[in-house]
Structure formats: C-alpha cells, structure tokens
Length: 176
Image (cartoon, rainbow, N blue to C red; front, top):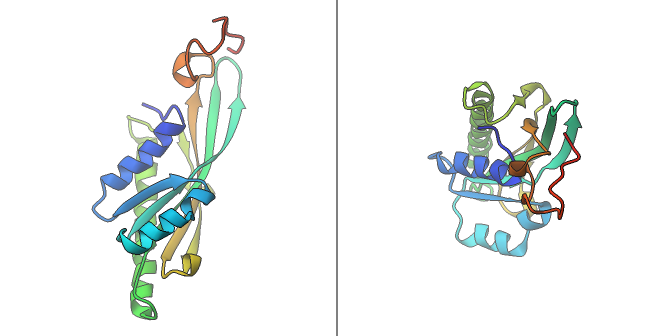
C-alpha cells in the first residue's frame, strides 16, 4: 500500500484534491509547467479557485543494507484562491481559507502515515515549512506554499520499482 513510484505520488495528491469539496483544480509539474503561459491563461479564464499545485519533488535515496532502501520525496504544494482586486477583506479571507486547507491536507497526510494502509512510511510535521503567497505572477492569487518531505520504502532490486523487468539484457540483479 505504500507509494512505490513517482506516478503514485502524483496520483495520491490528485486523488486527495478530487476527494475534497474545496478544490476546483489540480496541476503538478516543475516550475516551468506551473507558470507556463497556457496554464496562466487557463487559470485566468476558465479555472475557478481554489487551486492546488503540486511541485515535482527532489528525490534522495538512502540505503541501510539488507534490502532496506528508502526514497525521500522533498516537494511542496501550493494552495491559492483568487479574490477580487483591492478587496482586502476578501484577500484576508483567501489567506485564511487556504491556510485552513493546507492544515487539512497536512492532517490527511499524517493520518495516511499512521493508518494501516500507510501511504507513507514517514512524514514529519516538524520538517514542514509554510510560506504565504500574495499577488502571484501579478495576478490576484493569495494562499500558501507548503514544503515537506515524505519517505517511502523502495526495493530497487525488483520489477515493481524498476522500469521494466526486461530493461537489461541480463536479468541478473546486482543490487540487493
């Protein structure tokens, strides 16, 4: 049940957003995708806030021997609302709403770490950093960027965690 690869990490957050009554839009990618002209045009004309952007992670591996390998996903998500320009009470409400949404997402991640289904082997709230965002890209987007790390087990020696069992001409596995 642990997240086993990059696609499952993205799917976890896509499903989390889809299961919420709060969010209206999800996008994942690197900075160039998230701030692309196409996406900016879409968010200006067709996408209703609140939106959820998941940044692609930096990945670190740890090998503790005897097949005990961990993958650490260091990433962030951004939750934004788009209040009316120069409506300070609406901007304050957007900052508050998105803050509460960040806390809900973190709570869900913590539950999924402790739950029997265990999506993550380890998620530590002590390592979370949350920063406010205002007027993102000259638009009226207000919210928060939440940086975090999740850790999952990784078995680099077997097919579910590799591209394909036939990736190498020889099926001999050198990493245990």
